[in-house]
Image (tube, rainbow, N blue to C red; front, side, top):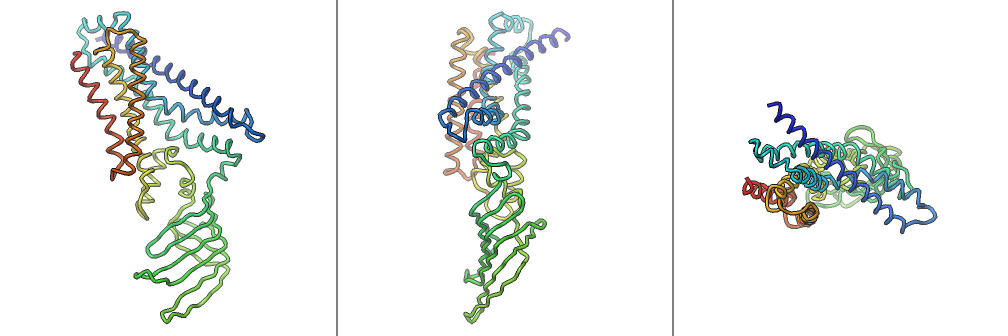
Length: 356
């Protein structure tokens, strides 16, 4: 039992260091090439220093993106080094099953899964805003602004020319219809302010009501209340790309949108992609194990890495293609997001079963 624990620790530490090393190298290359690409966009206000700050603030996003393929390459390198030293043969001869070794490698990959979750939940939403503020030459608060926002509540249509995350509105127009969609009234306000959940106040209002006889009345007031489900924090979320929101923010925003209107598919796609990310990472690690124990066990390390890169890139291209296709052809993006993961898992399991 003690010997098995020592072997498990050895396999886990070897593959963990390989995965973390691959993550560092791939992330550094991504940062370098992105910075070189940003140098072509330099001008008087966007200097080389600001470009460097933009790339550094974007680094957590790059790390998150390379984690699955880093797990794939790290598993190939780690297990490959064990195979080159004949350590895997000794383990198998000692009665350690193939699936137990694979389980130890997957245990190493769980570290990257936890890192992926931490980045997407707590780091990327903040760092992405900082990166955008550097590139757009605007403060972070100014990024949470919306121009030209429409919302509907029952038979009421509301247009907001300007809104920000502090709960400030400008140039609000409210159009009311009856059940037959006949115009009942129009309300215009110069400004608005958030009071509490569901309650706003409008300043500088002018309200025209259309009576049943076809006449109309015009009432002007300094201040009027407005029932509006919109909350300032969701105004801020509208300004952020769905893939830059954390999983908890996506759940909160989709719950709000589902309650008052239809959830845009782009947000559902981003949510399911984040949910599927750990499973994609594990599926790629399973494929990496099949390379070492399966048909590529007699090949050189360089050849294994080339095949791993092709498999990893092909997996991500297929996942991106199906993800965008789901916006058009599928009622829920979840099906298309998980198809490549299921196929990769089945392929890896099949190759490992043959190798056993």
